[in-house]
Image (cartoon, rainbow, N blue to C red):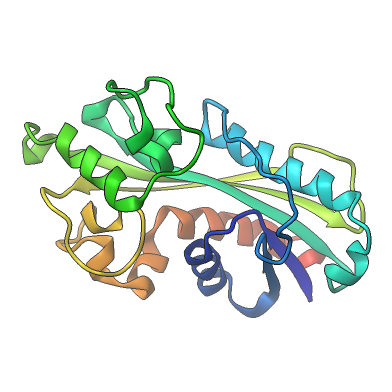
Length: 229
């Protein structure tokens, strides 16, 4: 079984990936590697952030004492993602700053005041405040996910990794609804639905989400190589 080392401490994200990919992998996350250095997500695009995170973790793991013991199995890959919400009325914001939107300066797209993530409820509140005068027909948005995959076992040359992308179109609700999900799920209504991601539940979300589509593209790639066999 291939070990998949997911470059995140967000257990919601790990469970989404596990639910979508199934039992083909042994799943590890940064919870199993607490000493792994943090990677600053300072790149201007999802693609570059995902690649930076994957390459940084892969390089660190290549020098980790006892890596063969801590990463079970004959093969292993690092999987990193960068994902977020793009709102058309905000010129694509919050975009790569989705997880720390509440820490931004007053104008969308301005420099981040803090490098750390901010609470989901604060990010969502800021989004709704900025959209309070925007009518329903102009509240279009999309979730975007980019995955970067690097094979680390057996050792491979340090490359940027394979990239896989997925998007989910929708609109921003006037107020949060539902108790499920995380992030902006309570205010995002996917196209063709009446309920938010938080109301639809994980099974429905994992069929249509941006991450599900990116993972489906990655799965097609993996099915063609030995890692999936």
